[in-house]
Image 1 (spheres, rainbow, N blue to C red):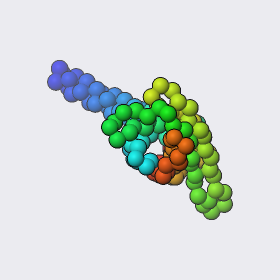
Image 2: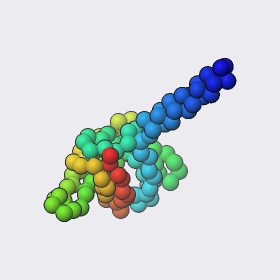
Image 3: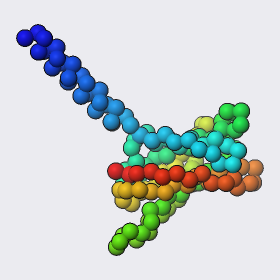
Image 4: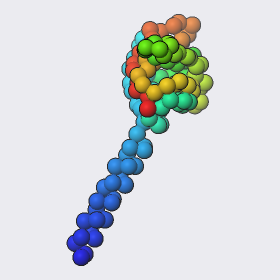
Length: 133
């Protein structure tokens, strides 16, 4: 009896742990815009609707860059009867990161692009894909 209760407790704990991991999942991707390292973080898994995006920029030495202008673009190509969907948001600096809200109109695959302007110079954009639930 005790052995069965221990197994049941272990199984329940494992299920709760996995559920917590799934709930805690989000998005963290790294890339480059010119000579800057770019990190994009979303605390929750991307989904249709508003999604808060945090962008962190680092110079070659790893020091946070806080004197840039950051814009986030998103686009989903037209498919069948569904038209092209796209948008952009200027990110607002908050401490050592930049925050923007992406309003994804539908679930599915989205192309995302981060553009950075620093010292009056537009850096090459960084592009990546996400899948919204």
